[in-house]
Amino acid sequence: MATHTIVTIVGSLRKESFSLKVANALAKLAPASLKLEVTTLEGISFFNQDLEANPPADWLAFREKLQKSNGVLFVTPEYNRSIPGVLKNAIDVASRPYGKSSFLGKPIGIVGNAPGALGGVSAVKHLQNILPGIAGPILGQPEVYLNGIGDAFDDKGQLTKEAVQKLLQQYIDAFAAFVEKQNG
Image (cartoon, rainbow, N blue to C red; front, side, top):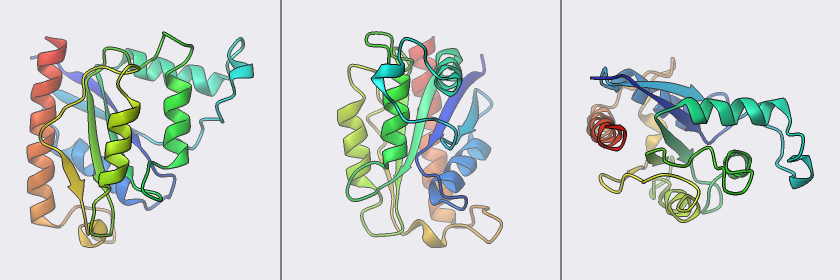
């Protein structure tokens, strides 16, 4: 079985973000068939269509990373009932130039999380609205909305909540099968 490289996009810039901790936990739980490259978005400059003729190096590097991958996994918090602006900016950068989206044909997974009760459901639903047309197929089931995520990690960022670990294991195993089917 081949090893598939998955760009795992963290939708938060916060150093101790729950999204980063979830992404790192998923990378540890991933079966041997997946290699998750946890990717933060600090270095991606703002999208500006005026720059498309001569794109900044950070855009080109991000696009190339996505193009070389076998899939993309978004791990995002919810900001004001949507995705964070930094994540939307990265999607805009990667989906251009028109018709040449770096997400095209890539199987997509989405994990929402929040310390509150809803677990990022609005952010996930917005990604499910944004991505069709610029990305490959999106894993529909299982859906993951991690609510109350604040107490799932220890002070070193290690996942300690067994119920969350079980849920993430089920998800990453399902995503691995989905990626294998799409890349097979």
